[in-house]
Image 1 (spheres, helix red, strand yellow):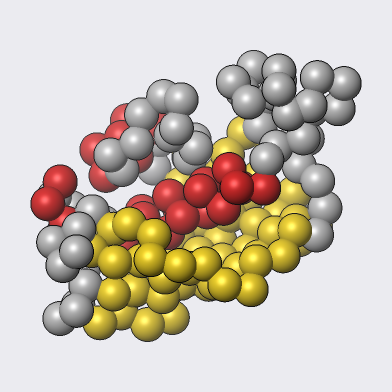
Image 2 (spheres, helix red, strand yellow):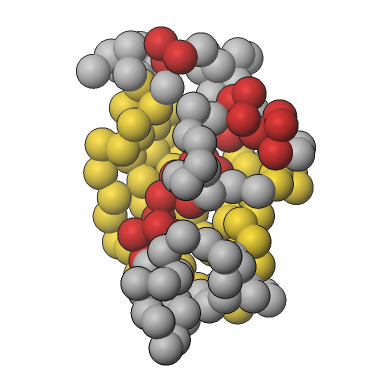
Length: 147
């Protein structure tokens, strides 16, 4: 899935669209997406000028957007502006290694629980750089239609 297809699914836009490509997905089950981390990303001048490290909260946001790819599909019940999913909570987040300019962040999000009636979803996510785990956590999402 290229950036144009991603933009049809996710409501995010520059500078907050943090998914560049989707390399694998099964609607309502899982998604694997890529964020190319470049020195041109708008957060690097301030985080940090002498050591460009991707902020952890942006890794979490990128992972949630990758999860959105799996959730915001018509066959799952998403896919319209009225049915976006928002954060309801994050748990057990761990940052294992810093992500720096030049890295390719590979995010794997898997749906653990989906209660369509209540518009709630729980996902588990892991992010990797070069095969090494850099971040992991559990994500709770709520449908905009139910909030």
